[in-house]
Amino acid sequence: MKKLILASSSRYKRMLLESLSIEFSVFSPDVDESLLSGEAPLEYVKRLSESKARKVLEAFPEAICIGADQCVALEGLILGKAPDFTSCHAQLMNMQGKTHELLTGICVTSQDFLKTDVEIHQMRMRKLNSEAIKRYIERENPFDCAGSYKIEGLGISLFEKIDGNDPRAIIGLPLIKLVSILSEIGIDIP
Image 1 (tube, rainbow, N blue to C red):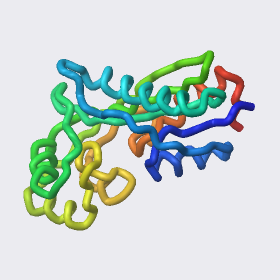
Image 2 (image 1 turned 90 degrees about the vertical axis):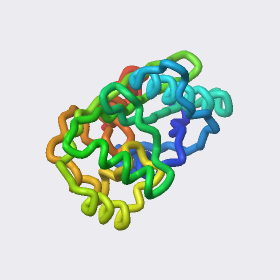
Image 3 (image 1 turned 135 degrees about the vertical axis):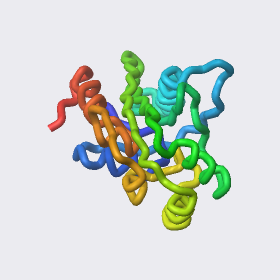
Image 4 (image 1 turned 180 degrees about the vertical axis):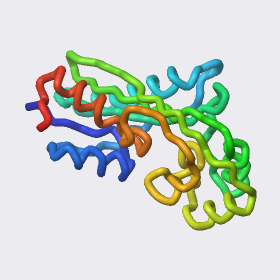
């Protein structure tokens, strides 16, 4: 079997892939994550997922590479990763009481295979006041996270409803889609 490589430095993606009990390596690709002019959220996560997987494939041409990326979209606009407290607070205040989309792209590629897909979750945030959001940020430090929250931690308390097919995708890697794609190339789990 070809070597499987996760194109990511994310510990969350690594932990999710480890849960499948398959052997893999990790290699962090250097990919520009800037949003292209007029790029829609769906195209953005597909492009980044594929770019990451292809970048690792360039370094390891005999491997099967897995790339994944996420974005949060509110009313059709991508919300960037908030780098500091003020930006994070403003972003969460804007999302409170509203439903946004969390899009998680996945790409699996090798020299003779390429498949990209996206898992979309509808995330309904509770109505929160400024003080509650401040407490959350101080406790969790969700800087540089899609949507300014860490759903795998205290961030779950911000939500009243989540609709989607794969709860693992919210954390960063859509395992249901990944298992399906891997089976297409002869990697069966379990």
